[in-house]
Length: 413
Image 1 (cartoon, helix red, strand yellow):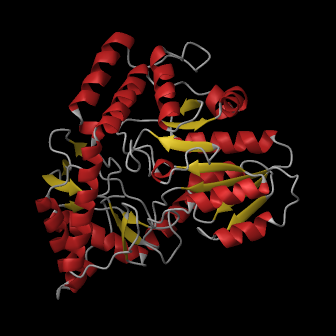
Image 2 (spheres, helix red, strand yellow):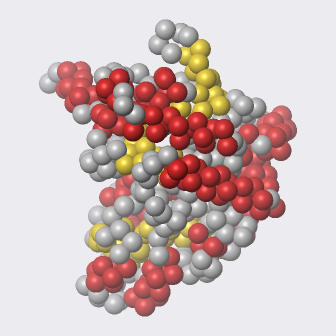
Image 3 (cartoon, rainbow, N blue to C red):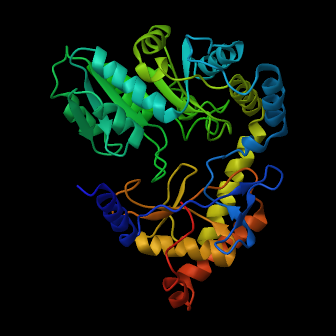
């Protein structure tokens, strides 16, 4: 077999279909965020405004968080030097886990190097160790959830997105005494929908199922203290396991789960994805802890974020820019064609200084390609107005031939 030719052919298929992923080399500035700098193919410098960062509250640029990271790095070094059971558990790891557990009103929490790893490890560990466990998974669940469930041989039931009636129909097909785990997300990042948490929790109780929620796009933004959709809906005691991230609204790095002390100890003791991975650097833990404390104490920051979101959508409506209506902070502009989506993103960056990532397969199904707009706490009215103007000019202007002929190469996802 000619391995190189085979791989190159598959890559070319991606390019031909408009789904090939190009990476823009971003020179991020903590002082100037959401503005950033980059060089084009000719080496010429440019600036642009980032409209696709998940740094929702701009906490990665917060001076208190940055100072905490630097201080602990000087004290504790750049890395932990081992797995959690081989010198990789420091006071900073334990302090952060206590903060996370209290934030989600759980007995304990467990840190991972990412929420993807936390999902895969937790779901596979439960599936492989609870005899006969049946997974019930929302059809729109994240790739990490799908990977975790696929990684074990357990029976799987897929229910229609946020369809509680369909979920109950599937639950009724499984014997009452058979263990069950319902897995879903709070905020679905590719369509902006919010799950019916209470209805799912009620079904779980009715049919004796464990519940697992991915809160990565809810953590930091929703609820009185920013703990997420569960806090907002007063359901923190109704869901068994919460998955979260430190890499989005918290603005640092890492992932975690929060649950009962028994569940956490079980994953800690049996989860190979946790056991055999070097732990997060102590300074990362300290910075994340500082960020969470800042978020908890600064309700005004979250309020300002949602005021920006309201201004963004008003600007879109005023400029007749179609977007999907939802109750979350995710703003989706449907394009429904991978090549067109890439061309629009290219033109926005190179002609308007607007950086948006085209969302295409496999992140979304073919035919659901879109632009996902992410406003942050540091976007200004001038940024919002410029984005609306730029999108209107491209999507509704008379000179669409110009951008349609623009080559779909060499910018970014």
